[in-house]
Amino acid sequence: MERTNDGAAAELDAVAEEMFRQQLAWSPLYASQIGYAEHTGELPDLTVAGEERRQADLDILRERAERVDPASLDHERRVTHKVLLRKISDAQLAIRARRQDYTVTPIPQTGQGATVLISLPHTPVQTAEDARAYLERCAKVPGWLDVGTERLGTGRREGRTPVARPVHNAIAQLDVCLTSALADDPLLSVPDPVEGAPTGWRESLEAVVRDEVRPALARYRDRLRAEVLPSARSDDRPGIAHLPGGEDVYRQLAAEHTTTDQSVDELHELGIELVAGLTEEMRERGEKTLGTADFAEITERLRNDPALYFTGPQEVMDAARDALTRAQEELPRWLGVLPRAGCQVIPMTAHEVENGDLGHYQWPAPDGSRPGTYWLNTSKPHTRPRFEAQTLAFHESVPGHHTQLALAQELPGLSNFRRHTQVTAFTEGWALYTERLAEEMDLYTDDVYRLGMVSFDFWRACRLVVDTGMHARGWSRDRAVGYMVEHSALTHKNIENEIDRYIGWPGQALGYMVGRLEIRRLRAEAEARLGQAFVLRDFHDTLLGNGNLPLSVLGEVVAEWVRGQES
Image 1 (tube, helix red, strand yellow):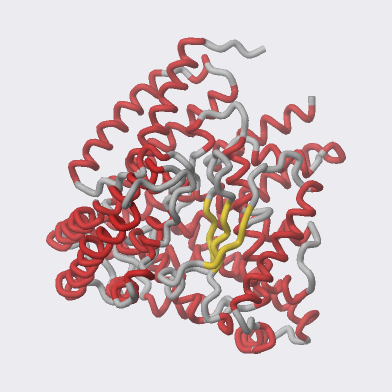
Image 2 (cartoon, rainbow, N blue to C red):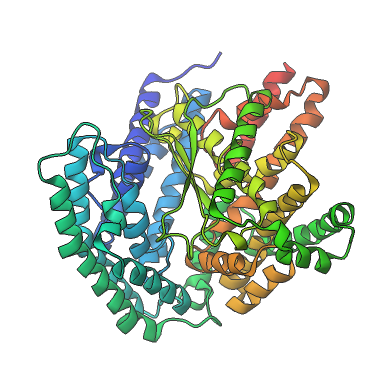
């Protein structure tokens, strides 16, 4: 029987809760998205002084956590202890990377203008107090943009500059908003709170957006054009290896997003090896499905056959909803504990689609006021392949992101810190794992959709090659685009959007395939150890029953489960 030191346990619980509360304060937009309203009136602190305060706070948290002897804790808290130390290190790395000094993109995860146009309008407004706080948040946008422009100036003086193409794309995104009617501004799309808005709230919000936010966005756009573009890097130098200290930063970012000790060179070679294996699989499946084993012919057909593409946005939505419905019906056979929160499919906003991804997921509100959301890009449907639609839906909704992330929020007994921890390799690794699991679940409706499954595997394998190629080996953007054109069936537009995303978010794309491979390895080892006693549903419950875990910690948790099954 485990014996726990109550004092050590209480201290660890306190440090974990403090880390969680600090994370909410440091990332107020994320706090809003996961249902914590205490920071709805705030925006992230981008100042250097703010980063120094965070670094000091993290140092204190690390010291407190390291004073706790893990041997005095129960199993659950030992896991928390390891996750906590890892996330403190990751947060300190993010500060040292100083991304604000050299990053401009049209995606909300890394672009300041995109954050205003895309992330802010997703702020949940349920109460009158939420409405007042949202108005306060919008009023802070001008000053926040000014700080961001100052940080870019600091980077420029120190030789750290963004890449020109994403800057052009960000400017174009702002142009679309600023030339649209005020009534169409995304910040005004927030509905009135169900409990009633304060008197004159809607009029005050319109005035803030018209008189303060939109002029500030125009100034920000103009400064990007006049001050940032002239010194921005060309497509020949897109990687952070071209920045002072960039190679070391990238090695650390790769470790953060994969939560492994694999070197950048190992990740690059792994990608090349995976692409070679997938090429053979595509040839075999192509011969069966399309009547040709020639890889170039297969990819040409998948890219250019009009019959394999959608004709209207409603078709795109219908395909996603159908895949989600069928997956939900089948899921209880493959997972014992299911999330209570539902999942909805909604088209992306007009400001997000041009340079946006194919789709992405947003967490449900913990209080049940909002379901999980699969945001789907339905623009230009004739460029969106039917054969990839099911794979994308399984990844973003069920059994992928929605199943895992909604369930993590609902796990009983876990601390707030553990329920909301974010680990790229685990979250994206699980979602990628489910794309192949969907074939085991017999969710793909024909062999053409299974080709889409293989095509998406190419996509994530190629990421290992091109992300490391640009950020560690000095590849040009054209070389990275050309590699993915040659080694995948993705459309050229999607490839360009993806490459630009990797340019602005170094290392993040590595976590997907690394996470999937680790889950597959753990599953194979458990099957070999347990034989007939292995139950896949129980294995999945173990994977998802502990929240998001770094891969090293996940391996220990699965090993503990296997030992329990053997006893």
